[in-house]
Image (cartoon, rainbow, N blue to C red; front, side, top):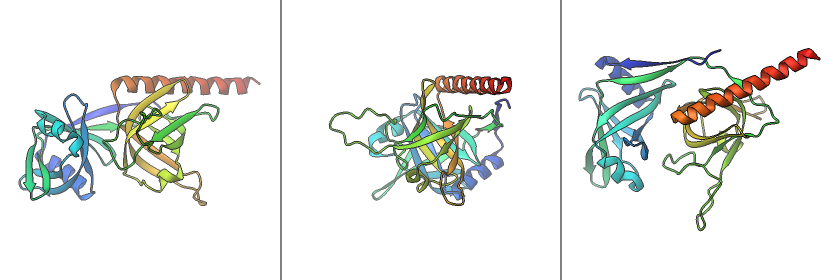
Length: 258
């Protein structure tokens, strides 16, 4: 199957209101990204005021608060009904209630959603080292996953998961029990590293589409959709998938020739 993506532009106020209300009811979060994309924060939605057409969200962590609050404008990103969704907002309006601090996000006039259709998925041979590494499930502002830990910094446990298949839109993994206990369908994981021996090494965000377990609860297969990938990394991913596809076809031909 061929990979196909279609961006839907939504500008009907009623539709936008329903989409954001559904995300709020599902306890979804919003990612606020600075224009240069160097800083972002994943924030919980505290309140949805449909009449005033605005959302109230928690404030950013102190470590990046200044960058988020001083930005002239921001891009809001999230996954709603498995669709990568984004829109632009002006500078934040900050509200303080005692020790609590919140941001008001006005409903956008235009909202975009990425409609992803089926993509070619290829199995990753067990002879190839293919790993998905999660550094911190709960903290989206953690730095990217890396095996290099600066001197004096406590080593943060890394959770390694075997990649069993991959496409240009996502991966399937045999989930490490440490990860399986902490995720569910709809979970979002940040700063996830995907490494495939001599073919690919990228850091992305992912959305848990499904979790499939066997009756004995062993070797759970988790389907992950990529939700935040740089163009350069997307190109590298496509090349990796094509390489694995050609390799699989070559092996099939060799078997048929015997």
